Length: 288
Image (cartoon, rainbow, N blue to C red; front, side, top):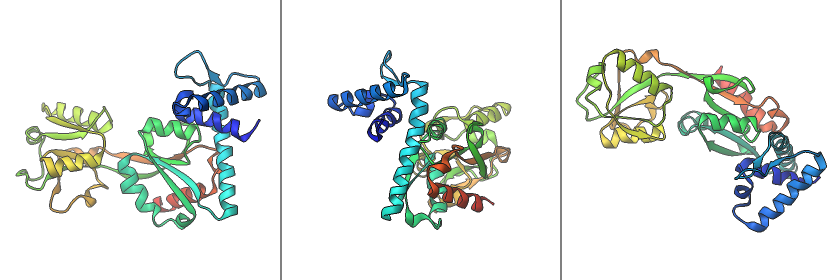
């Protein structure tokens, strides 16, 4: 067994398949296949499912890849300590959370000058997967999305604000029947806010005009400012909106919808990356 063989296994797990890990290079794919076969001979079990395409790791292979990934990252951290290089700390979250919550906190973290940050913008289910596979040090996501297999701590609670373009004639407080006349920009999918809006508007006998679906809240903010749509934005985003282009107004009942954000990690993450442990403790302190 060698570090190169373990690295090949980890690469296949992270890429989601053998061909993906090899980047389409036939020679590299052949080498990685041989390396994994040698690992299988060493451990006496199947690590790669060769009956399907793409060829993915078996559950045993995924477990070994998670452990090997942590081990390899530990070696990297130790090497960084010895050579005075920056240790890698991988942080996951949605685009809005990373931009408006994580980065403002990180910039005052005392360990920032000794770390190389890797920010990964992923949906909640992908964040959970990366944490469980120990391919990410910590993530900030909805508390309701964190499974019991992960350690987590609630770090923020927030609501939403109805935002209108500055030129809009409507003034708060806004009623649901008034909102029905305004085209809305919303996040794609069927997330918690979208479901709440659907239920709340139905109770009022109102059908909302969902005129645009966006992949992120920054896109929703741009649609409000530049296209004249209305939209719902997290309360912590509102103070950073372009001055004179967007304004927040009161919508009846909206204050009843609240979201909890949690930071989460693998239970054994601190055996891997001490700088990540330092960042977690700093986040905890700031969260109070």
